Length: 465
RNA sequence: GGCGGCUUAGCCAAGUGGGAAGGCAGAGGUCUGCAAAACCUCUAUUCUCCGGUUCAAAUCCGGAAGCCGCCUCCA
Image 1: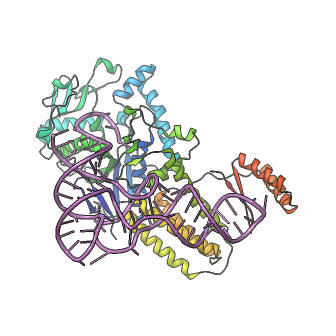
Image 2 (image 1 turned 180 degrees about the horizontal axis):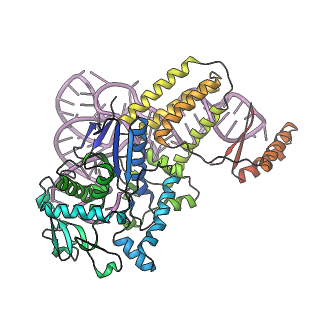
């Protein structure tokens, strides 16, 4: 079956195709590094990651770009409050962001361009838009005239004539011809302090939308394959990116626009402004596993809202535990009689897995396939109808699935000499039927995060989750 | 007000015309010194509600109710 994605442009699932054979160029709107990202933000990056990984799974060469917004109102005011430079301020959150990506087992993009390092490209783009009559300057700022771009609204399916002034109108609105026009370049203001660039379009700083147009086109070309982000970016951010890019280049900007739904908390979207957010750090500090958070987010299809709850996180952890136990048990299989049934099971699972993922990255269904495989193989393991080489093949298949899912990464369990001798001591105690001592050792080890299991093949140990 | 989406078991969640996936939780059983893991069995005659189309509807059409998002910084 062919790979299909739901394209926000057409609101339908479309068969995926690439501009350059075998190669995909994709862009995800990254974080504004003014604070720690919350797990709602990470839903977007995990979604981008799944897309990235599955394209690699399918054999495409992928160039993946994610921007870092390191200049805007919030970063400027944050740095001023602390009396430090903009860069010093954003560096902390940029570092934290990359740490978090690692915790969540998100595969790095090739390029993470920063807005402040691409002022020149943005200015060029603004100049082009001015020259072509899509932009106008007023009081030191430059604005995009949406009226001049007739397809405006094609992504969000909003009628530009319907975009009227809402109740809230910013103080600088009078500088625009129309309220829905947006800033390409913001003229310097006292509030910006020392944050400004002297450029051909004046002293000031870039608008938000222009950075994504300038940087994505710089690294991926004027016309590229996939652009992703949260649904809240459809309007105005992505609509504006299209307007800027297509007006400037007179070419189609992006073929596939993919958007993930929000992470909800008690019926509302998780957002800084609502105060109902958890950062990854918050949850790790409470002892939750980052990969359980990843699992929780993958258990629901990316275009569905997910309600975040601690019960859900607990359930995710337990599901993950089952997968880990399964792979651990497979590694211990000893039989030498191959079972021809295994290959059939694996082929079926692979076909089902790919059908699920091909259908607009249906990770819920893909996880269902994975657990069905777990159950099938567990049964054969129980019946001892599996050889060690069969087990190796199962592990390979699971590993392949996981190259797309990214759930099986675990820290190595380090068992030091002290622990080893305790385990030995307990084995002896059990032989001598000193169960009181045996249970005490088991309890002590559990406190250290090591769980013991006695099987017919001897005592196994694993990390407590 | 404009545009869009959602409602499936105790909880989470796939499924878009013809067998209601999967996970978590729960119950019973096998195994075990006990526990854990694993296995087996059970847990939605039914998919928010009301009409309609059809031989056949969770799935298509119309309507209602509830909830959510975007229209403003936002993943």
